[in-house]
Image (cartoon, rainbow, N blue to C red; front, side, top):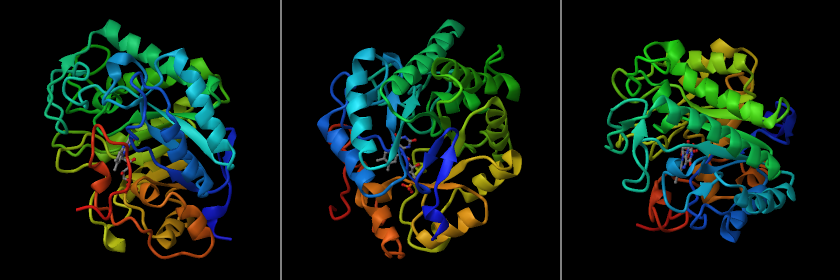
Length: 362
Ligand SMILES: Cc1cc2nc3c(=O)[nH]c(=O)nc-3n(C[C@H](O)[C@H](O)[C@H](O)COP(=O)(O)O)c2cc1C
């Protein structure tokens, strides 16, 4: 049996195989962030198709942290029954499901909420200037992450995934470029780390020691004077020491041109573009559950990367939008590249239309 199909734990939870559906904003929630039948259907198809775990698209932990319309919410107890139905649908197929906890910061759709961040700095991904958060507001956000995680647990989801990449609030605090504070939240590596550390602690306090708490972590910023690979890997090391259960390795602040998902991955050499980040993290954390995301397309390469020990799981995002049943296909012998051509058309229709594969649309 391929290592891709060997079970592996994340904290107290065992995933039946190494395939994780990485988060993709589904644009399927109701007006107040409620789970809809469409969102359940989307997730259940991936669960039925054999994935070991689904990381849901980012969800806002506080009304002021909403990044887009039709984004799922985790900010209110009234959302729990919908989340519970989603968890039950996924569990029917032996698949696990984590909520992705996020606060938009300055990576938001203009006008939907106020653009905020650690410092008055423009977000290279949106062009939006941030208003500097007051310390009291920072503590309110930290607390909101904890409360959202408690709802995640209450709803029967299997774990919480902090969004710590891609230019959203957590990654802004981690970044030397975006965080120019001189108080206890910035000024040196230890202080820049404080926000993600407090977010993690708030979540852990809310969910207890046995509930899986993980992070999608931006290891390197895509801007000059931003987070370096060494700094990013050191944040991973600190989080592992603090007790986080797994890290999904990704990019940090992004420019408009370079989204986290690169386009046109047509050869094996172009795949797994964040592998050097995973290698840097591995050298700091030793044996510790890691997943790698970004351009993984060939099952043989995924197998090689896990066998070499660089990662324990593989996270795929766009391929699952294109082929929800791709894990079953691989399991039954389809070892060629996945069908997703990384055309990026799945981003079309934003913000109003629900996420779907538009590979054949020009
Ligand atoms: C339409 C779309 C929506 C995305 N939404 C999210 C999100 O909500 N949270 C997140 O962490 N990453 C998000 N991503 C990034 C993916 O999770 C992933 O990191 C990236 O697409 C690279 O992986 P892939 O090559 O397997 O697609 C999104 C990507 C796409 C294409």
